[in-house]
Length: 308
Ligand code: RIB
Image (cartoon, rainbow, N blue to C red; front, side):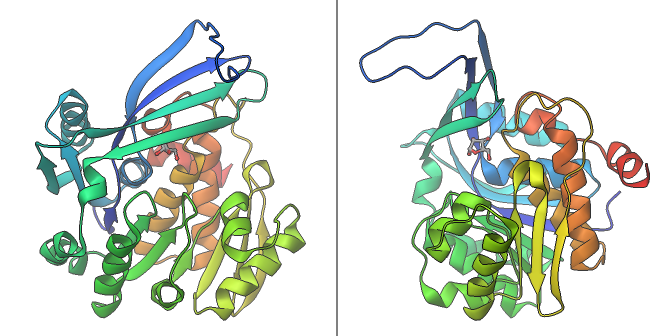
């Protein structure tokens, strides 16, 4: 443990997860007997995934001063993640997410209210510059404001720190952000939204990846759920199949599991192909458990799956 140093710039939100047969239509109430409250947020989940597979992790974010904020602090204390750059805004609230997991498919749909983290600015990222410069890899995503993610990528690039942008959720991006990205990791929906072409097949994913490479990204990994991931860079294209680690019970947070594992493998010096496989193994284990952050596997579990 401890050789790979990762910095994650992103959100913590409290996940309020419901599982049921179907979502209500507007004006309707439906009942269910499944509810869980736990730590979530794409950045925080990625930080926890990275920590559990062996990295030293610093998280940059903002919370409210409330019960969900206390849940975040307790989570970082228990996991051993540095929250020295997680600030608080007493005038706002800690983010929350409504998550609905469909019982039959175990697929999910999510609504996020980011709360205090929406007030994070590029100047806040500058203040955390020493943490970024000390890392091997910076991972960020689009639950933080785009100028914030962009500033994180810029500081990392200036310091020679590898950059991962998980463009989730997809929002319009300025063209000048792409050349700051070493590794872009959209899922099919995000790849479709950002490339302007629908991504359903491996060929579609490759075409979307090509459009991102043309915009200046160094390598693209399109995550494809049960189909695994498609990697494209200057060396060519590779399809990495998904790992079957057991019965799929909840796919929420699988992308975060991938990104956390991928970041650690890169920080440990693996090439992008091996790192993609490592990320797929972390994701394959996470979907066999309920929840997001709580579903992230240990390093031993990942190593066993990879060598099995
Ligand atoms: O990627 C899953 C995460 O997205 C959930 O934890 C939820 O909080 C949303 O941010």
